[in-house]
Length: 126
Image (cartoon, rainbow, N blue to C red; front, side):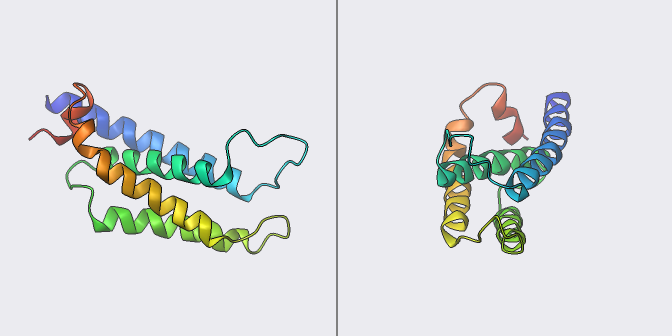
């Protein structure tokens, strides 16, 4: 059981770093007008921060999904928006921050459901 929890934490940290790099890259690149938007911008923010919430929670299993984890994620979302304001081809949007917060909140609400998935529930085991 400890081996599974350790595996989840190591894999969670690797995936978390990779996700942050890819999300940051995508957030700061110019928007390609020739490429149609498959998913709306707000849905992209929501899904990205739901996944980041899951990865942060699994990467650091010694603590619950608490205010510190949520604050760090919201701080990252705010940092992306501030960085975007410095690029002429990107814009800062408070709607994006709201979508980020919604993804985090839905993850928090989905924890009881995730605890029912056999392999995933090991994250919350003693």
